[in-house]
Amino acid sequence: MTRMPLASLTTARVGGPARRYLEAETEDELILAVRAADEAGEPLLIVGGGSNLLISDRGFDGAVIRIATRGLRMTPTDDGGAVLRAEAGHPWDELVAYTLAEGYSGLEALSGIPGLAGATPVQNVGAYGADVSQSIRSVRAWDRTERCVAEFSNAELGFGYRDSVLKRSTVNGSPRYVVLSVEFNLAKGHTSAPVRYAELARALGTDLGERTDAVDVRREVLRLRAGKGMVLDAADPDTYSTGSFFTNPIVDEATAANLPEDAPRYPVTEPGHVKLSAAWLISHAGFRKGFGLDPADGTGGRASLSTKHTLAVTNRGEATAEDLLVVARAVAKGVEQAFGIRLHPEPVLVNCSL
Ligand SMILES: Cc1cc2nc3c(=O)[nH]c(=O)nc-3n(C[C@H](O)[C@H](O)[C@H](O)COP(=O)(O)OP(=O)(O)OC[C@H]3O[C@@H](n4cnc5c(N)ncnc54)[C@H](O)[C@@H]3O)c2cc1C
Image 1 (cartoon, rainbow, N blue to C red):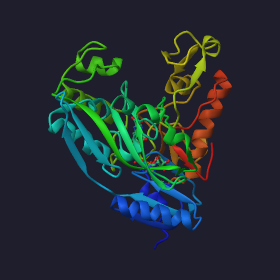
Image 2 (image 1 turned 45 degrees about the vertical axis):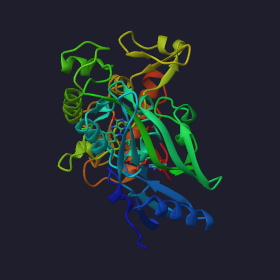
Image 3 (image 1 turned 60 degrees about the vertical axis):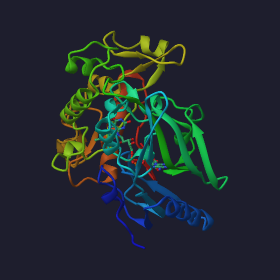
Image 4 (image 1 turned 180 degrees about the vertical axis):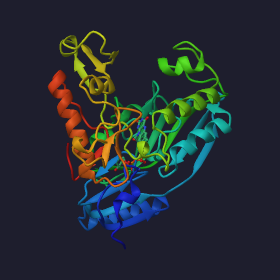
């Protein structure tokens, strides 16, 4: 038992100590550890790759379990595709690379996203016009309320934009359902899923909605992401972050009508609503890339917006969680003042708030 500094487990490199810290390397260890904490009435925080967590400088006064289970199992299906089962602790990008190496496609546009497989259904991880809800077949999880293993089909996971039943039942980083393993449906061959993102289509020299080579999609996604500081790089403080700090707001059409004509608007399934670009709102509210680096901006230059992208709040090396929040609050307030739209954080905030 150690008072583990949680900053060492998160990609934003902030977070105070855990009262009790342990790692679970097998599914049995994970379930036993969760049950023991629950039976002792101890607050519980589950940590995967720590890439979507902002933990306060006070840390976590309870048990912190890091998921360290690993393993992938590919089972070919009668229709020529395959089902890939991943243990929750398997690194996500390793999984994506493995599917392509084995000759299967479907996940290529989600290349380069940090973190572990078990966290991907939690916020329905997505990028470049794809998200995991398009591929997930089922999720097995430990249900802490019913104290049993539960299995969810894709429809039962209630996926939405960066949302799922798993996320909606998580409080302060403490989920009702601890994901044990995830199954993905894959297609045979290297023909990609349709390209659904204009910038990616341009990079590939193809049209929106067209299919192309999945290996090329992975290469271009990794290149585009690296250019925005969205692939972890220990040498680059622009990647010491939680990725996008804000979700793209979904607003009703009347609210969107009040915005300048050139504000991007994307269709969503909810009738009478559109999705806006948080990055557009931030930059048009006057926040430049690197906002915060100037000591006068409020954090002594310890935290700032990424110098490559206005959506990521970054630790320049010595920041505290509070420093990151100072930058995020300034941005959220500025956007609200300029456009009357409230931005919401994408990472899970533990013992802190915007
Ligand atoms: C540079 C960078 C780029 C990013 N780009 C993207 C992107 O393009 N798209 C995107 O969607 N996200 C992106 N993210 C955010 C993040 O990588 C994803 O949300 C990722 O899936 C989080 O995985 P993790 O294992 O690190 O989860 P953690 O940060 O460890 O945990 C996140 C939440 O999930 C919970 N959780 C984790 N594992 C489990 C489990 N097994 N069971 C139940 N709950 C669990 C945690 O308790 C916590 O509430 C980015 C982050 C960074 C740093």
